[in-house]
Amino acid sequence: MHAPFGLLTDEQWQHLTRWSVKPGPAGDGKGFVFHYDPGIGDAFRLAPMLMDVNLWPLYEQIACPVLALRGGDSDLISHATLEAMAQRGPKAQILEFPGIGHAPTLMSEAQIAPIRDFFASS
Image (cartoon, rainbow, N blue to C red; front, side):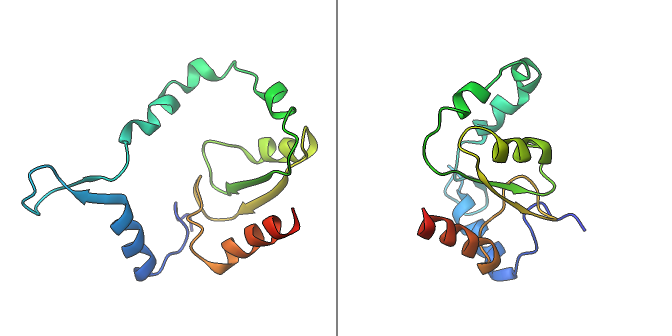
């Protein structure tokens, strides 16, 4: 089963909602707006133009340890790209979360523990 954000508890959904939206400008409590700039996705709508950009030379200049995270069902970064990140440049340690869309919410211990371990070992 595909769950864009993973399987979340009601409490986790409430947390995400609390920090993702705020009361709208009318202030009447009847409307909500995103608590972030929804224009953040505009660059991805330009993706066809950006497909010819080669960022590998920049990636290969990174000199610090890298942990690359990917939701297993991401439609923005492929598994093959993640694997290439592990082979090139800083040779990223890769962590893939199955059954989740592009961005894992990092709200469960199963997702947080390997990140904590990465920072503890770096």
